[in-house]
Length: 578
Image (tube, rainbow, N blue to C red; front, top):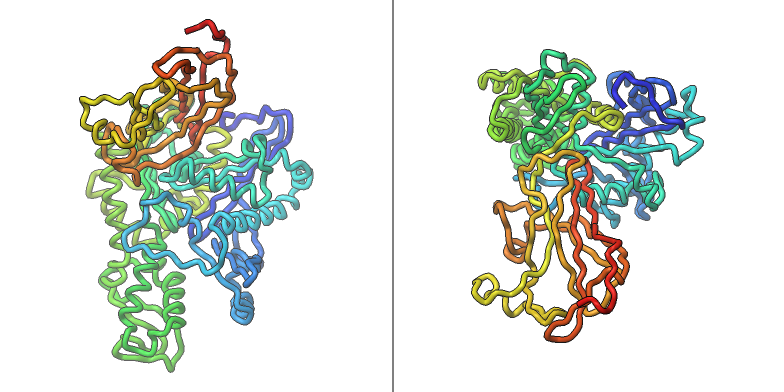
């Protein structure tokens, strides 16, 4: 529905937007009441945060404590309480953190990245599900205290979920997140249950947040380009958009979105390596000291650092904690400003390079760069990117409202009234099939040992790939992409299927899957039941066989890829057709 317009549905609904981040997570909600204008709010109270002013902080840590039996013992802010940590140590509980990044697509690991090891025998999807269940339970307890809360929570069928994810994630990651939602008890494992879980990229969610919270009419002019830089804990998502129409607002992607594994946790990883090196020959090399120093760095040194020319400090101990050789005096470690700046450099350089790539791919500079996300609140990062943007003749803007909740609230605004009508394909999408063997072609001769004789008596080469959607294609939401195929069988099968593949390599027209097998991934397999009488009977060198023509159909312009099979149902062939 257009923003500012009343909800036209006939039933009251609750929509929860869940932003599971690498280090922190949040939930926003909207109660849709027929005839009323929707309002988006954030959950502002979680267990373990009582007594604190959370009016500006709507997030909790993305951590879970498990006991030896794999049972959840503490989650989020409760897991970070001193009393919980003592209890965990006494009972041998295991802390799991940074689990979100383990759902990422293969081949997207960052250079120098080191994820905390998971020491329990649980799958990442199960851990994700445990965390989801906790988030939603807290959200519902909060909403139940609202005037309409208990009423809207009476029917689970009237609760829908919007889940955000990094720009680089696709169908496989969405399927895993939906599976986690089912395991968490959010929705049943039915078609109707699946339909209650929606997805949006973090970049697109951030765009909608910025539109609602600060993008003025002079920016949202026709042909203007806007670059969103969503700097979070694990990833930095970049998305470039072009304004096609100002009223009603219509926006399209002007460059394929990018996703960097250079969020704030990357700075923490480098800080741990630096501290271990500096403390190597001292009594402070013990893991407990390093953990304490890193915690103090994350809480105080990193967010307040801004001047390379000044000494930075990590206060971690007491008066007896002194080691002149390590620059430690009375529990305070002194570090050169250049050392701290060096921890940020890989992330800053990666973001600068990605901004330039977005500009290059779009063919023009953005009218405004919008910096959002939890990492965007870091003074040093913001000042460095501000200086870079100015030097390149671009304007960088940070919304005054709390940008840490940009994704959760933006995901809800996207669900209510999304403005992006077309998106650019990052990769090549297609399907595998058989090619008729041709002895004059080297590629075919080279694969002769793998050829298959089909029902028509002819030889075919497997592992062929056909494109359906090309990389860089601007795809409108309702546009269909079709690939005609033909099934050949010795009998009238009652089911046909097709695997949908994604190719992430450098070729523009890959022909064979086996040449770069690691760069192809199966997004899904589509199955369809068909009428056996719609096959056409034919005669070949091996006798009779049957063929069926059909199309593989992709709808790619949505936030979630949809695949279908289509054929002519009313064309019935009898046994006399040949």
